[in-house]
Amino acid sequence: MGLRIYNTLTRRVEPFEPLHGGRVTMYTCGPTVWNFAHIGNFRTFLFEDLLRRHLESLGYEVFQVMNLTDVDDRTIGAAREAGVRLHDHTARFVEAFFEDCDYLRIKPASVYPRATEYVRPMIELVESLLARNLAYKGDDGSVYFAVDRFAAYGRLSQVEKRELKAGSRIASDDYTKEDARDFALWKAASPADEAVGAAWDAPFGRGRPGWHLECSAIALTEIRKRYDVETLDIHAGGVDLVFPHHENEIAQSEGATGKQFCRYWMHGEFLTIGGTKMSKRFGNTLTARDLREEGVDAAAARMLCYSTHYRQQLSFTDEALQAATEGVRRLGEFRDRLVESARAGGDEASALPRAALNLESEFRERLDDDLNAPQAVAAAFSFVRDANRELDAGAWSAGEAASALRVFDRVMDVLDVLPTPVAADEQLRVWVEDRLAARAAARKARDFSTADRIRADLAERGIEVEDTAKGPRWKVRSPAARGGASSRQSDS
Ligand SMILES: [Zn+2]
Image (tube, rainbow, N blue to C red; front, side):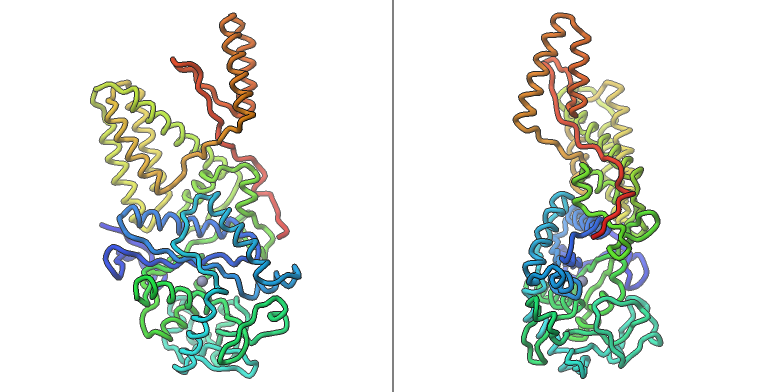
């Protein structure tokens, strides 16, 4: 049936057809680098990561743009508070964001444009909106978009025309539907902006871009440059961006180009902790680095996110994280078994090929169905059960196991939820080898209680030992999730 996705613009699940054959342009609103991004933000980035990987597995060439908001009300406020220049403040959090993405195995976007490096196209966009009479300069020196002069305003968020307070203005970057009014494209420079180095000269006055303007200018610049088009295939973000951010992006972009800005709008739901949306505003944030410091395997964090459909709220609890960790462990063990089975198989025929075929088609169908990750994950586990049953029965061929492994790996490439192998440092390696030698000596002397005690010591340090015909093999177990996550409070 092909990929179908829920389009916020039409409030319907629709067949996905990119504008130009085999390529997809995808714009994903990136982090505002005023602080560490929290795992609610990362839930959105992980949903987009899955979307990207699924599109690529379907054979599309995906051009993904993720902007970095390094100038807006919040970054300026944070830089002022820290008493540093805007650029110095944000550089630190840009770096932290990339570290967190690496930890969570998020595939890098094709480009990461920083807003401050796109001020020129932002100014041009404002000029073109002024020329088309869709914008005006307010008596405060800022430039505003006139919502009542753009007929389609409110279509995405379904904000009723009567709720619009045309002619009255809002200067802040973020506001609610109650404040649906003319919004700032360009904000006249204030002493606070100047103090942190967040002001630029423009024909319509010195100032800085509004947050909404940034994404329009960056998206249009990037897709023009790459493909000479002005229409995105997919624009994705968190559900809180529908209004006003994405509504305003449409108004600015379509107001300037006269073309549809984006064909498919996709929005990921919130992550909640204790039933409340995670937000710095509510003081219940947990960052990716908190998880990493607690020894949570990124695979488990990914698995947890994919256990709930992206359009449903995800409740983050210790129990859910534990379950995800256990699931990841099972997948890792199963893969080890498949690898071993491809080496040790005979030449008998089993039902492994049929199980692999089922996995391949079912996994794709589930993700084609508006990215139904929980069911795609369920298909993977159902394959694990079926394949284990075949392997338990003891009759399979090495070739069957090898091709089942290839299918399983293709599926795992999309989800990327196999446990992180833990690298042993040199000191640990020497210690383990020494303990294993002592254990071998104890066994040889038939001192089994010493041998058992050594094995227990190793287990306590997270070392798993497997006795094989060629001697003992060992590995470091993946770090287990430790508790306390859902009760954590952050003051950031
Ligand atoms: Zn944006």
